[in-house]
Length: 337
Ligand SMILES: [Zn+2]
Image 1 (tube, helix red, strand yellow):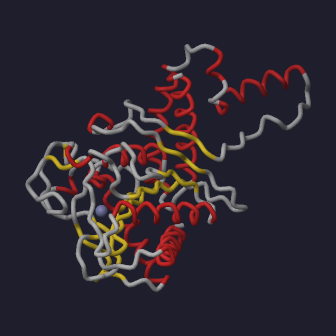
Image 2 (cartoon, rainbow, N blue to C red; image 1 turned 135 degrees about the vertical axis):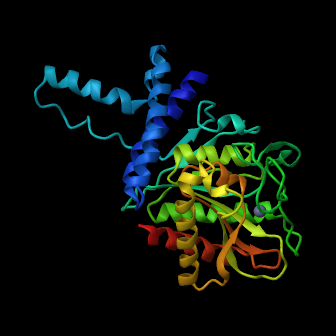
Image 3 (tube, rainbow, N blue to C red; image 1 turned 60 degrees about the vertical axis):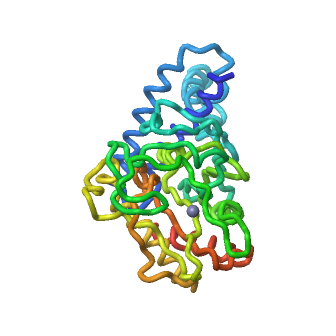
């Protein structure tokens, strides 16, 4: 069972690697990323080759070419069945301990789902939608802030100077009593539908009240199976100050630490462009739409990744407002392309 699951996961991530090279505006950067992913996927695949026949069903991508060549020897003009396999609408992706930075995660017992768009114009681009918070017990587990063990340079929910932070903090509570995790979940579900309708594929990190995946696990899953990572949050102020993204601090050598050094410009570009989407949608933006904090997500991301703070404790988080926020995010992503 476990092997079968692993094979399915590999199938997804190989497909993901192929998609990555076709997605996004910056081909050079994407090239670097997908090389790494492909190498990992291939080496893992080799390990799983000596497995009984029942496993041959999930990795259709791999077995299809062999079949077609065998058929063409027997019959010169076979039916056009050996075309690109139609991707499944939904695929479950489980944790792979061989992924880069996987060892830094302490909570990763849940799987995630990749949804493929059936829109007429598919964008071949996977967006990881990460509803902030919502991991029972995550507050009391500690993980390393930075992969190199250095201390946080700017205070956020964890103070500067700390080398460890909560694996997943519990989030704030709105002035009306709604927990932040509940609002980020309802927004994530609306965003999923909006993205699928617009042709994006969606990797849903959390679809329920609780997911046993810490912030590092969420970043690592996105790194390996998506092209962009967007986490959704509401800030802990009470001024309804507007939307902003968490930028990458230019302090304490943070931008020289890997993987931040190789990716911080992509994070900034994604954040700025998403904020443009909010401006176009007429949603108030806080200041210049950016606040620099070294977040765990940023510290472990190898794909363009951003934390969006779409309001605060005093902000409207009704379905109508969240629908508008979802549209603004889609609009921003469209601007990237
Ligand atoms: Zn939050």
